Length: 240
Image 1: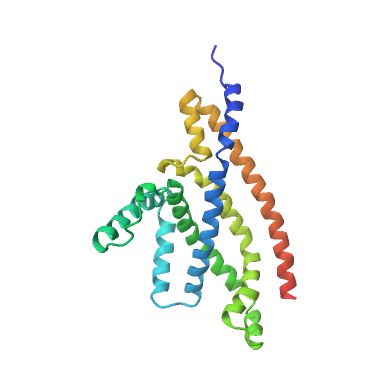
Image 2: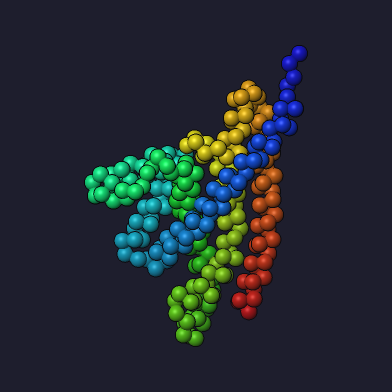
């Protein structure tokens, strides 16, 4: 009689799957960092209504929110090499660039950064606009430059407001990294697929990888809760 579940294979698959965690975490964390720069830049363009750039940023956000992440990954993976080839042939630029040597992790990082940046721009814009206008006026009254005002007064308070949404997006990004195997990145999901095909035990490895994702997201969620509490205390200190 055939067993419903090969428990031994399931347990034995954990070490191999966990060994790819650095790839999953690296793409998620790296894309979060890069997307914060994209998000802040795009948010400020919208807040200050910069001519031309505000239209471009609106189109960018609309396109990213209106297309699947999977399609965006493919666009980056196949589009960047074509752009580099075009620049090399037509203008002689980037002659030292070898697209064949670019690791698929780089394309994954770029795709996730561009995707997450669009969503973060709206979160960051809302967070900045939620800061009491009196804070802006007070900073101007004491002669603070716009840059100093943003860095020392506005951004810290806006960050405290944005952290819950940032946390949710980061957790979603961790789960979305399961898509990167389609361009050859062997993350924890990719490793699970490889193990499953070798042992013809897909059910077991998908149970294993789902447990790894679950535990990882629980840990991240706990860390984010602590960060949010500290940020709230810091926000109250600034406001006071």
